[in-house]
Length: 195
Image (cartoon, rainbow, N blue to C red; front, side):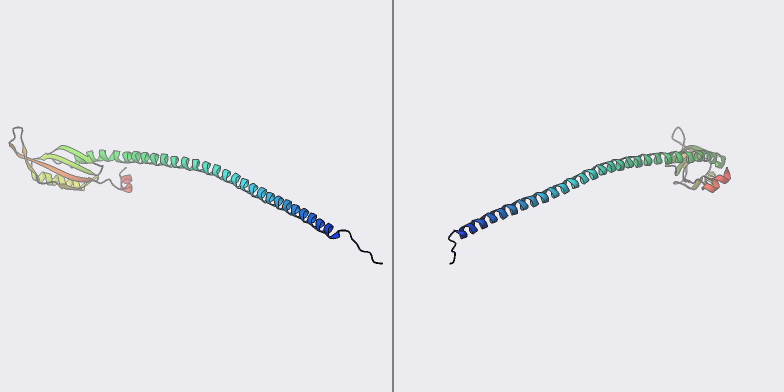
């Protein structure tokens, strides 16, 4: 005879499947949560690492900015010192020029010519005013100035006029003149030959 199972086996199978489904669902949810937590932890660690690197780089950049600022300050000081040195060198090199100019004034001055003033402008130009007995003496003075070592391109400004006396009358035989000239120091090699 056949045996017939009258127990509610389908119901048990359905409940077993339901339990298995819930267990699998819970396991999948746990795995999903663990995976999400792992990914989140990994990403957070990467962000913290990058922030540490950024902080380090910012510190290095600040130090480099301070060094750049110090270098710029040193460059400014160097430029100031260089400018001072150039001024001192210019003064040192122009110091003997004044002596030579005065010597040229004495050696080139012909008889009958008197200088009333001499003005140096920018260490390049010189203005000379004076009186002379005759215009020929002024011309001789111009020739001598143009042949001098430290004075060149001398030229008469205007034309000589009769000098005024103290009473405002023209003095006979006295001509007032004004000369413009350039200061021309010799080149380095020529200056060494003179010394």
